[in-house]
Length: 175
Image 1: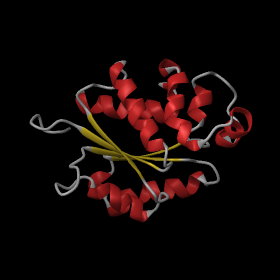
Image 2 (image 1 turned 60 degrees about the horizontal axis):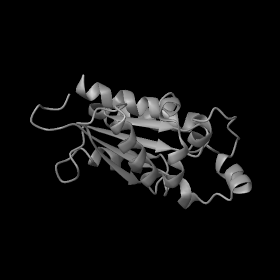
Image 3 (image 1 turned 180 degrees about the horizontal axis):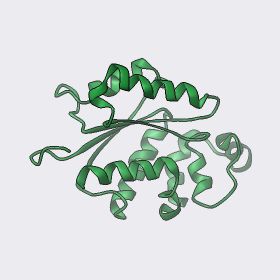
Image 4 (image 1 turned 90 degrees about the vertical axis):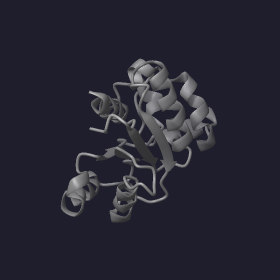
């Protein structure tokens, strides 16, 4: 629990280049619609690394005064082409190497990729490769991702596993 003199801060690292602006906009909308407490500060950054030991070290660094002095760090990755077991091993390394941060570093993984949120909120079947489907059927470009947030139903989206986890993590910080 953060000290009363300092507001809670969550740093989110997103693997997808255009995922960072998408998440910044999404967090703003979730705050405006009271899904996330408005007094929590968020910093959203693009992570160029896959989920590995270096990524975990980067996350741990965000807790230091020289960096952003985060209260929690969330690492968000696409699940496509990756074995869930590998990501689970990386989560377990936090327990071994950084036991003080086990409750503060969260690794969240989309089943496929961030574009699945566009299908989830409209109750459409999610294809195995959502971005490829969108490119083929809607002339989609990755840089359009933040703009497409306007067509998302926030209530439905709040039930998606990754978004629900972010909402719950933020609520726990003010509980």
